Image 1 (tube, rainbow, N blue to C red):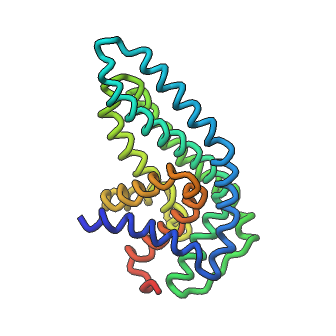
Image 2: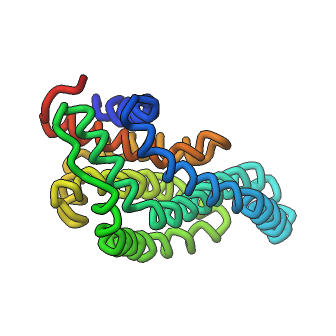
Length: 244
């Protein structure tokens, strides 16, 4: 059960790492990407959820209207998770090369190793990073579509929401551990295999990332914080040089 505590602790450590001297310069571009993505689409998201909730209530027969007190909150919360996770996918595709550089800088900071990458390396990594993000997107879409269809069915969507939350938490962890692991030539298949051995760690870390994504203003810095937190997780759980 210690993994349930460890996951959120790494995420909180990620927020703290963003302010460390030597790391702040690697945070600027991921934060800028998040501000532009979330700032531009957040109003549209809330408007769509409100309209969809009203439509769903109107479709419920009168004798089932009492279910609106259960179905609608679940629908709203799940819809916001879906939308904000979709935004985070777009943000990560754009910022992927810079997130990889941030992960390497955080690992160097935690282990005391020499930081060797450069902005030229970022330029070389743009295409491979985007391809990696698209591979994760395909993995997500193929599993999300059946769950999203279930979410459209009243009553059934209550149980489906639990599955969606677990899947979303898993995907958040898959999304962000990719950066430190890929720096060590561990790619998508190997990453998932390692995470399956520690499901509670993956769910608890990704769960807090998901919650932070839903919090206004905090979601502007959640991406670099999750990159830093997942790198701290990688360093600690793999027994690298003790953190400072």
